[in-house]
Amino acid sequence: MTATAAAPTDPGEIERGIGVFSRESAREGAGEFGLDQVTGQARLRLYRASVQECWILDPDSPFDVRISVTP
Image 1 (cartoon, one colour):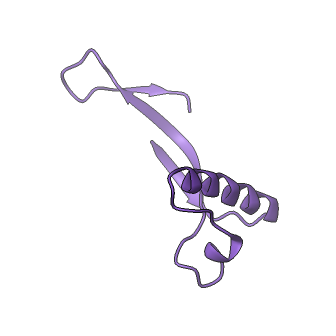
Image 2 (cartoon, helix red, strand yellow):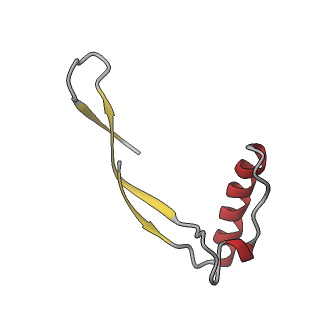
């Protein structure tokens, strides 16, 4: 894939992102994340990726043949 990434600025989008990340983190046993852990001087940040192009490898080719797909 090729994509651009940007930090979300909308408070609702940030809360949704933290919710998704926290659910997966908790499911894996690493605990939940709060807003203070991904904003300010925190080491981790949330980003949103917008995909421009996406490919899959041709399963029938022995070579690196990529097939464009719609993201």
